[in-house]
Amino acid sequence: NAGVTQTPKFQVLKTGQSMTLQCAQDMNHNSMYWYRQDPGMGLRLIYYSASEGTTDKGEVPNGYNVSRLNKREFSLRLESAAPSQTSVYFCASRAGGPYNEQFFGPGTRLTVL
Amino acid sequence: AQSVTQLDSQVPVFEEAPVELRCNYSSSVSVYLFWYVQYPNQGLQLLLKYLSGSTLVKGINGFEAEFNKSQTSFHLRKPSVHISDTAEYFCAVSDEPGGTSYGKLTFGQGTILTVHP
Image (tube, helix red, strand yellow):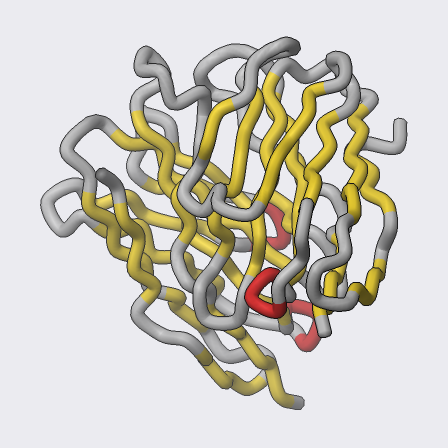
């Protein structure tokens, strides 16, 4: 059981470049989430997917798009990267039911120059 | 809307001393509260959660937290810390499960606990 996996672990982009962060979970969870972590700001929700086939905006969605490819995979795309998107990105997943906690991946450290 | 405030950004302590990390929340509905720990260069792991019932919740690694509805607090405590407890700790809140939030979490800003020998 790998849990939640993310690729890549590190990435450096130039302003204006695009890239996709990949996330996969092998726990058969319904819901998946993308967060960004910035110093002193905790984690902020970018997008989430309550179930396969649905996605919704979180607190800070601007500049990002997501795709729930299937039940296992949830990708985050930066179409035109900006320095303000330099951050650590975490993917999480959660089983159905009201009382289940989120499980987090190891993170992707992204630097936009 | 929910919000979470962690009152201390950094807490330095000596090994074997007790520690309390403070968390206050605001919400207009029933809440479910969580503490996560993040070790350096890793993802977040769940320490403990409060859903209902007893207000004193015990978690992993000897940590416990007390839910206080009147004070809207959920402080994390450990009676004797180890060097290995050095990490960043996040308090988080989720609203009632019957709503449409699908378990979305609102996080506090984090508290860096540093345990010195």
